[in-house]
Image (cartoon, helix red, strand yellow):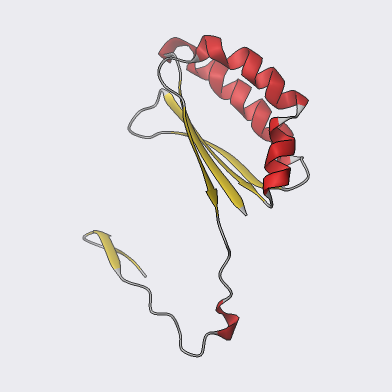
Length: 119
């Protein structure tokens, strides 16, 4: 599985326009073969930054996505809305098969706040 995370800083006065444009891209992308997930978020501590998380079942599917007409349209429209540096990271993730584990895997406890503990 391929995971892509992108951050797009946009002009404050054009944020709504940028969000709408990215939502159109997300909707079209979700319909593509090989798209497992395509999520769009506003960064909580920087509301002028739009964050995109994508999951694809293969590198071929991601490459087909980048070659699509809706990505071309997005790339033509987004430059006027950007203010700052766009960042992107791509991860090749292998899913673990825990079914053959003889002993249960003990996950570390992480405490993020006084009353929230993740296992």
